[in-house]
Length: 256
Length: 256
Image (cartoon, rainbow over all chains, first blue to last red; front, top):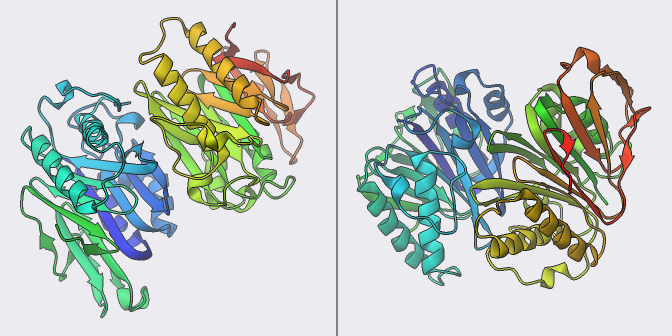
């Protein structure tokens, strides 16, 4: 199994604190030593860093941790390979373009038989079940909506339906971003936490590090962090219901 | 105008030496201060670094320069914005998937009216004429060849035809890679150089740096470097003919 981390905010925010906790699980406090990757959105563009080596030893991870890349939407994944060998093309997050938007996807879990599901336009570059599932989702969206539906709720409902269909083949904890919305589907484990004023302190579970967010933020900031398991102690993490989709924009849950 | 740099080899090779020269043109020895980007292939996968800031001041550029990422195919671009504002989504190289392969593209020049050319499947994420041209090329390839043609020469001829068609709208110096072949089209300026045994010394034009490749290589290595203008003194760079396409694989020219 792998670990997922996502962030969705109303102002560009760095993910250094949460990333510091998560990356420890990449071979130190967790067994997820088969690479890691992270995608940051900046406007319509996105930038990704991938490394097939363990996160806890990665020089690129150190660059990401120290540098404060600020972003409204982030998807991060550390991998324990279950399907597909350890190499760059099998390292999440995966990206494709649809409707002139950059879509990014990361997945935790195993999907039995998904690689036999027919694909039309999008084809996997690597050999993971995850990338196949991502290509299938985009194929379905594209076929049903050659242009974006006017009502974003239509797309949210459609993505929820697709995620539930894939989930029937195994375990499908997923983060999906279209540069504006962050779609989070919980199959077994996914939690989220919204930080907003008044900000307080938080302490990571995986490494000795405490941050007082009051010093790092302005009163208007709204920052939601999504993770496989809560990353901090003493904060009100919401444990998602299996089978549910939650969608975030500007740091807040978008009503279904 | 921008500067292009490409590399194609028969064994994974680092591009540190050439990159050290090129990146100086990103605001120091050249006016190309509107960002830069580089894509390295590793097997079927690729990794890209993009920075909308000047190359000569970029911390990410420093990471790339110091780290020796080894690759069979590299495309690098430093930008002097002529079309499209300076932001991440307008920073080359651009990437898309076709036939389950990762395609990467960078362009130097201006293309008049190309943004009115109709697109079908691939849509630009940013606003540059370059990304529009890239989407148009992939659209044409996909429509004509839903699966890869058996004979690679067929694809080479088709890409040459597409490049010449685009070139009629302005200036189209281009590097395009499908993870195996590196397609280089010269509209006005593009040069290449193949280094192989017996290796000698080379000195960069843009910065005081000399390397003795005999110490850095094995006798079997074949490394071709492609650049807008020759990067070194005293080596036999081939200045490409305007309107010509040269394709490299394993460091060598593939016959047309």
